[in-house]
Image (cartoon, rainbow, N blue to C red; front, side, top):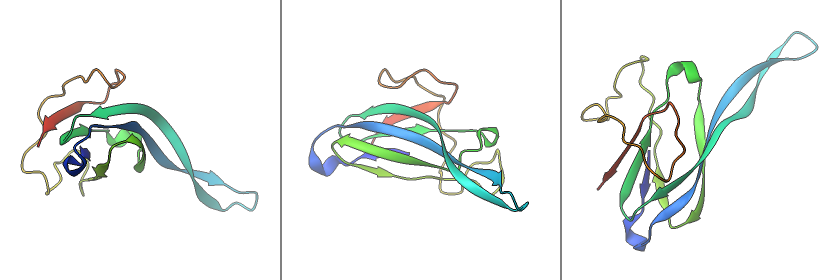
Length: 115
């Protein structure tokens, strides 16, 4: 979830990159994890607007990085204890996805609301 910082009075734009920690094996038979970028896409948020993206457990996304090119944003990542459930911090399930013209079409739902 990204929320534009309304204090600056400007919209925000930049890119979001999903990352995963991928297990690898070394020559001695041990394993380690490597950070791998999975998908990157641009975002644009009006002043005070929030963008929410959801991924499924099958996507194996462990986090995200944000590159802010204009304005400022606050970010939040929520992962439920049990897959397929709603994190306790959510007061209700996200509304059905709305496509935003600033984001590429993906299979991942998007919800944008104003605060």
